[in-house]
Length: 318
Picture 1 (cartoon, rainbow, N blue to C red):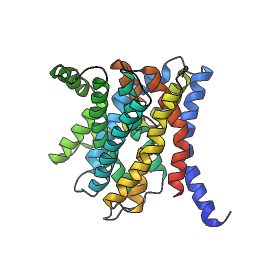
Picture 2 (cartoon, rainbow, N blue to C red):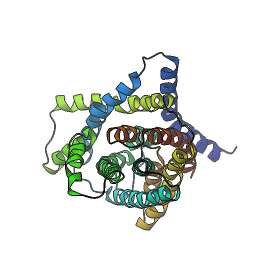
Picture 3 (cartoon, one colour):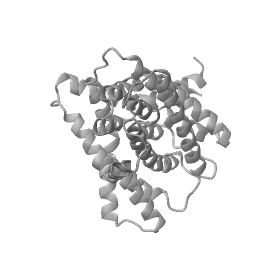
Picture 4 (cartoon, helix red, strand yellow):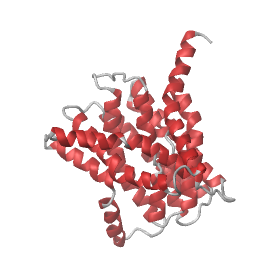
């Protein structure tokens, strides 16, 4: 193995191993009984309601002042996500996914785990600089926060549409879901702080940063814990199809759209990494809360974790 290939292999190993090793530790902790039943599920709730909102808010407030260089990356991510949603609906029709399962399938196909998998991978990479001088880590945060808003809105919409025809009566549950989504509220609060040019007192800034630091490792452990409880049943091919839409088709769409937007290679790689992340764990919670197909959601999460290892390794090797 020549030196260049060896360095590339080491980069892939050092980038992906911490992420998927933490997921594996979560599996071992739950399966071995080292933690009580449901502990990691509760840890995931803690992350969702406290750690992740603190991370998004603090990073937005500190990173967004005076920069708009991530706009092209965000627009590429948004466009690619819209295309994937349309293709996921087509796949659900072709697979004849019934009733409320269609919305669950589509959500699993487009809603990536940007915060708990995407960001750790970007942070594990060398902190390179994009054209214009922006750090790739800063650009990642500026992309993830608005995408959390989009994911929450689109997730609620597809789950509601799979159960009810479009009607004005959809508005109250839609608004209620959005109003009780902590990462969404934290991202909006961070955007308000930036627009108003406010700054946090040092004591609050340190508090939010400390809370945010627990989000990524706890989130990955929670992903592992959720894998243990999954029951695929006989319809394993449907979760697998959703996983392949998320981890194989999505990064391909991200590459095509990114090239169309004229992204430089580093920015294009970031978009592809985000598009290739496994289905978000919160999509399972959303499916349960909104009467979707919980088995399909959990199965898609597990299978997408497995398939994403291959896809992400290929993307990092490019």
